[in-house]
Image (cartoon, rainbow, N blue to C red; front, side, top):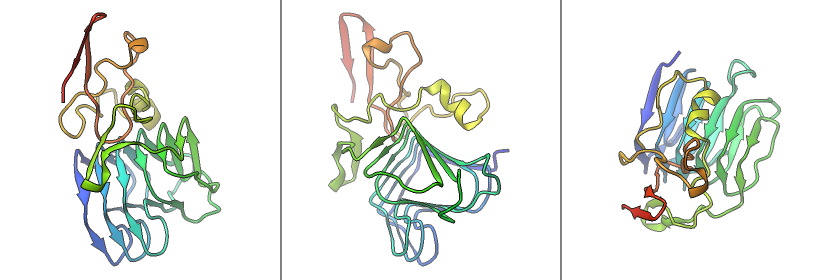
Length: 220
């Protein structure tokens, strides 16, 4: 069952001599949702996150983290059951993800995520992910990780209804609202109107509301 949750948080500029510069999770059944995790550093493993159990990481932006040894973005330690991997869903990740031990299978399942490089190793499985593309943040140098209009991460997350199924959550809306309080994908691309809303990847959602076929309202 659910033990704890970190939601709608900014985790940044932390330094740790041990594992997990930003967040270290020692238990099974926790969630990290709609979080911005950036500019954290560890002297060992897992600059952004060190995950020691089965965790759901959903709609997070994990960028600019550093680790002296390995896993600059995420270090995934061995969960107790290969049939229940850690889930990384609709997230944007910059930096190395490292499963440990490296020959262990099914440690992490990534679904509809964006990575700045290819992932290697038997411990990571990916479905409908983007590799090697610039997510096009508004101004990463200034800490603004909203997505630009032409970002490949817009309208590219896992449909909201499927997130609950993929991660085994109860039937409630657990990704709304996003970090700044905006709803996830009220209306998505024009061709998806009337279908399941498709949210953006990452912790922020761009706001597009179509009131009728001839009216487009943009709110920032």
